[in-house]
Image (cartoon, rainbow, N blue to C red; front, side, top):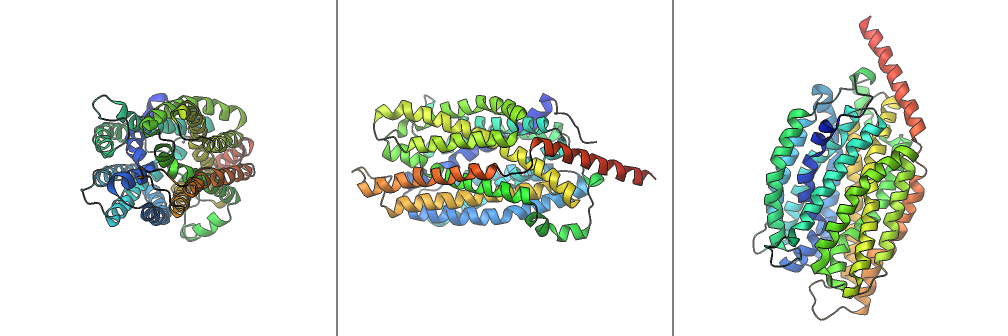
Length: 457
């Protein structure tokens, strides 16, 4: 029987720990466009095209991985082989992306960028679907996704803390930082992955309360398109992610090349990510009190306000403290998104199991990751494309034109704020609240019990 209570803390930590090393290595991906432009001479327009193509190609294959993972899980009851394979391939591909040869080409950047994201999905999709099979308890799922988010933030914090170590020549993020991040993450990944695979249960196969047949498999697309809560959820994810993607793709460039605070960038992220980690506990308690939907709306509202405030800053060292406070505020909002979105989707998975008679947890989560990558691709491409069109040059030492600064402000603030604010209204229309989810769980239990009685007879 699937647990109706949260897992014990040791098991929950074993589940979440590999995310530390994975997202230690994921951290550089958010600023890689600035690194490859500043240190390896790739044009922003070329990088924008690479990000757009690679993310869209990666997103299209997400449902394939989710579908294969679900099929394998229904036959064996295991998610672990995908998690192991994805982790090791991710480690291998990041080596080539973060430690490139001297003469880097756009094709090289594109090839290994695609490889990194293909490997990441092999880990991420089954790992996201796993809690849905470990516990039915909403608090338990919030706990697992909360700890996973905590470890993700911890890994990102470790990356941004690297330049602050005394043996680096500068506190800026450089190719040397990327090189060290790879080797440290490799040392961290192996033991945490081993502990997760050895000590975590496989989860409970869902055949007992779901009708598994070929008709269900072939009607998967129809099931997705007629799942109203899923479609509303995905629209909210798409809008909020597109806006945040525009901001995130330009944040390093904005702070380094425009505000002139590149040497403070890693310190800002260390402090803001540390604040986000502590905020996860607050979001967890808030969700248990007022529900996932209202908590998610509150977090996205903080994200929109933070992006708006960043656009008000002007160059100068006196902007360090305001920038730091805004980044803390914004990243605390993002922390809520990291818990609430997957936890709420797990409730929608239960709804799909009840309504359509089939469990497709990994497929649902693969669509979720696909949408997050599509909106990242679109947001990054639009943001970088606008900045490149207006002639902003991150490597320029002679200053930027008024048009270039205008384009940067549009791309990093005004457009993202409008998009993220729209997503808040969409979230309010997601129909799977805490009360309705509890009803769904009762009906699933009743169906499972009736099928068990028939099997016994």
